[in-house]
Figure 1 (tube, rainbow, N blue to C red):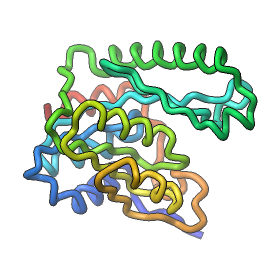
Figure 2: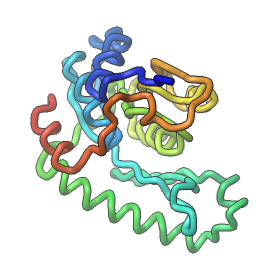
Figure 3: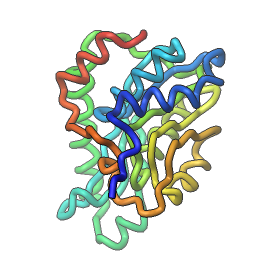
Figure 4: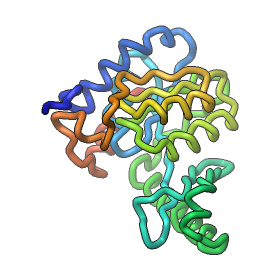
Length: 216
């Protein structure tokens, strides 16, 4: 069975941009979630003639099951953490363990900011229609903390844009933003990658090259 909805992330970005055209004159700012959100976000930024910046979010994984998200953390002037209390309680993660993981993930974020953005100016979200873009959303933990951080930084409007996500995740995230554009909500959602013909691992070099030709 062929699940493919998009040729690659660029194709998904162009399709998203068509649905986001109404924001072109609303001072849009595109905030991509790296790495996968960058090739999607750059297509949206070009189409809307909007600056592109990164939202650096790291998942807080349960120590003995890193793929299970206990929450997420985002950098910025005021780093923010969102904890998935149900997961923390069920997995029995202590507060000290959580604090240690958060500190480690913030250090990784800082290294990646320097690597990817170097001297590229940070764009303030204040007064902008902030469009948070990813290549797909599964649990929504990273997107949720990103949306809350963008709201806290003073965005005039917060929009979440993604090519594909489960319907229940979309419903949960609607409460965190002013508008949400999701192109597909497959009933049998399992993983983001199966909906792409080409879902290669985006590496640091690709992120750097994309940002070099992205609008500022």
